[in-house]
Length: 117
Image (cartoon, rainbow, N blue to C red):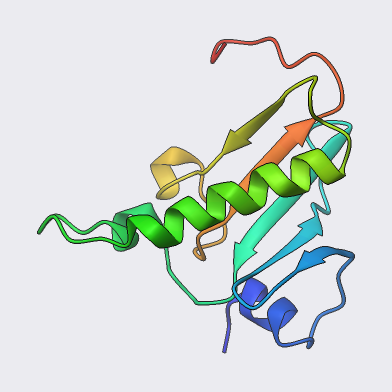
């Protein structure tokens, strides 16, 4: 197994877990881009949104919905609501994905103004 997130999930690499259930873990990002930067990672290895929703039209919308719900829960637990937070999923190298295991970035704890607002 060469996936760093799979190794974190398996307990082979230490991490600061902020949340865990049967489907997801949430950890602090080692290189935060905001005052609060959490990664919500599915325990099931899925490479990206492209793999989660293939071109044949199939896909697991319930799974992705649970990922987003977990991200919102973690944001709330980290004190980002009701103020606000940014949620980001990078897909593919051209979209900024550097770890090829689907994960959701939760960012907040300050003004999140920028080109995506």
